[in-house]
Amino acid sequence: MISNSSEAKDQPGAFAPPKARVSFLKRRQALGWLRQISIRLTVPLVLIVIWVIVSEMELIRPLFLPPPGQMKQAFENLDSLLPQAILTTTTMTLTGFAIGTAVGTLMGLIMAYSRIIREFLGTVFDFLRPVPVFALIPLFILWFGIGRAPQVALIAMGTSVILGVTTLEAIRNVPPIYIRAALTLGANRRRIYRTIILPYIIPHLIGAIRVSAAASWGLDVAAEFMGSQQGLGYLIILQQTYLRTSGIILLVIVYSILAFITDMVIAFIEAHITRWTERRTSGGIVASIIGLA
Image (tube, rainbow, N blue to C red; front, side, top):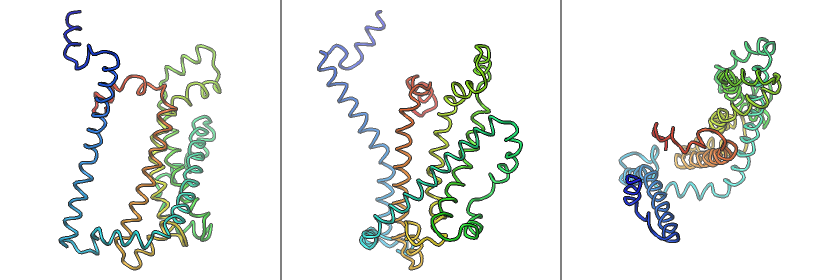
């Protein structure tokens, strides 16, 4: 009891009135948030300052590192084209990402559920997994022609491979004790999949979904190189043709912002659908030990 009281005395605002303590905690939380934001912005701000100094002093040729003035001019030139290009690229990327996620997850579940299907499709799946998706671009053009279909198919294939492998491996890593306990209680195979396997692999699939979401934006760039006439990738091709480095960098930044927003949306959904997991309910113990808190 003495040690607990002495620890309480060391904490600021421990014996303050309730309203004052609430105000103190809010200020402390705000200061912690500002400190975290300032730490996260330190390196980007330093890099921006270095970029401005180096580019304005022309230590590097503008062709390789354009100054802020050229970036502003590039934005003004592309301002009228960006909304439609962003809409086209976002629609195509999210469509391919959704199809690839559904197909990859379903294939992983089916191959894990049925040994016969796994034996039939496993060889084909293992053959396609290491094949670079970019190497298939000529075949996609030959098979599907030039248009939206081959572009969406390329994105879907790249994401489905990631989700298929992750789903299969996540099911293989389900602790056997969970399965034995369910069998002891009389659960059949279908109930085990629904009540144990699916809830267990969801947190593992979220990480793969975030990786495939980021990869889908990169695949979109390659997909739009397949004869696209609109979209951000098409604008990059035009900027490259006329050696407009500032325009290329600007479009890369737009891609990064779109990928960041997608990742934040997935992380927000993850925080709500996996709140029951140990890493959410344990108060960040593991994260604090390994340095992620």
